[in-house]
Length: 156
View 1 (cartoon, rainbow, N blue to C red):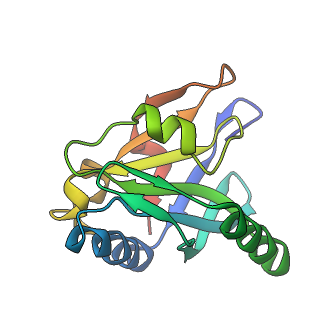
View 2 (view 1 turned 135 degrees about the horizontal axis):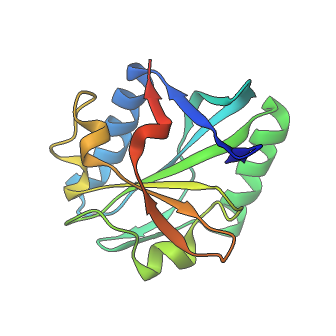
């Protein structure tokens, strides 16, 4: 997510964050992780989130997985709407971190990809504390998910 050595900002409305939290919390009722994707388009030095995409997914208390037919539906949606995946967001039953299962089943795999993890099935997450609650990871050139700060995410 770097362009010319400069980190790219991800711009997201508070409405998108509110909708994201609501969708992710649906897993809390069943004690299951949930995953969603933030989709958007490039802008100068920024990515603007324009929609939330909830893929069909297989979930449990401690993992999520996207089956092949769901990935095909996602790719079709991206092409049809000329969008790209900006970030993936998912919940954990406890603290927020990028687990080995998260590393293995991550939907986005390009260098600079962002993966945000919310703790406790997003039970206590609000649009106001979203950036404090979310743990953000970026895929490195060495194919490792590294913790990064949330300064690149701008709520507008």
